[in-house]
Length: 347
Length: 225
Image 1 (cartoon, rainbow over the protein chains, first blue to last red):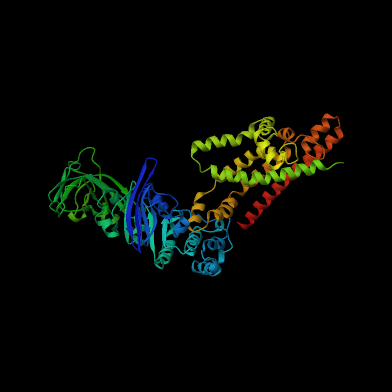
Image 2 (cartoon, each protein chain N blue to C red):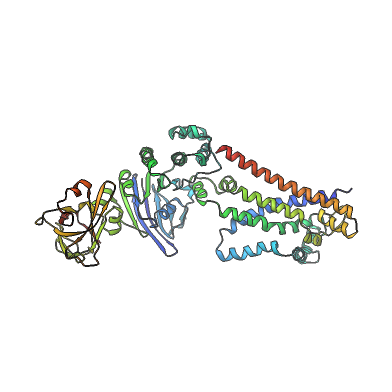
């Protein structure tokens, strides 16, 4: 039981080429806005027709350009949670859910069960415009599940909500999805949301999907700069492989990586909290001048210029707790290091 | 007083409003999905009757439906029916001139429709027919209602094309508008005034009803919210 996908679609000058396999799991589609995540979901749901490729769900071909198969969305049985939920404004909560029940003989029973399960009984007679954001989302989920879907697509499920509502709803959504036996695709640009809720991730960068990996792999070995950026890495520089080290011309540094560096590597990344104070003789230590200090809510961000940098080199971003920054003996010029295992090698 | 023109005008306007309601909505729905070039051409053709003088529309209809023209001749020979100079001939004229009003307002309403609602309906397994009548039409009902009212009012007031294709025969093809012209031409000012007042009363009552309906709708929505 899985969703197998390999599609291409040209939309104006934008080209989508996506390929992945999702088991009965929560697979995240992670990408910057406009990368093609929503287009991918629309192709899977059958709202948009890909130019070429195949979509297979649980062994059933939903789309196959070579065999000229293209099931209409009605026959795909795929639940789609839209960003703004797309509740029918002229219908009450009860009618919205009832409309989706495929087996008309079981309609009343299913509606009653979904209203209870999603705590919507008290608002069953109200229209979507009268509901809070959370109630709207619960109605949309109840409606999707009432249609007994084989897979569920979530398009940025929390983008329409205030952040203070988000966390509670995220827990509720996780509970609901935990009982769902099929594949769930969770589209987001928020790495934290993905990390809390998904098992594996497929990064989509400018219309191209990258190999599916676990969340842990995404954070430890993102592989590409796009994936590293989505995982929250802040520092990047051009890198030249040299055996088990990399040469960084921008900062005039050579850093040991503790492992052979593939020749394909052209960039390096390092997370801001992996740049740490170090004694001058430590491995990968180098002296830096402080260019700027930014106070964040719970941390301090220090922008550093490594000694010997090119004038146009990017600044190195270091992030540390406010206490650690206050305890620093020198706030103008000091030595930092990057541990070999913290260096992200990027292609 | 002979009430035939009132009866005739109302039935012509009612029948053509029903026809225009479906024709205009279907045209608006399907034309919106066509490629841009074809859409542009069809849009101009279908909107033309709105800006053309009614006499031009009447002349074109006579060219098409007249008993000596190919289509009119064919219908006459095949079915033994004359398409012009009967009471229902006026329906051709009123449909053509009222159609653009319905088509354009319906199209405007459909363009404002949130298409994710239709897409959500499709993914939930709802048929396209169900989505059209239960989601799209209720969503667009203000525009559809406005278009219907305008179409009815225009059909009721049609004069030029009607007089050319149906003529004026008292008790057969006479409508309010052609009767007013006939009475004025024969210096019967009192008779003309009577029909003028009747026409104004009908139109005003109709528009007032629509305003009341809209106000009630707003009111019920406010109460619901």
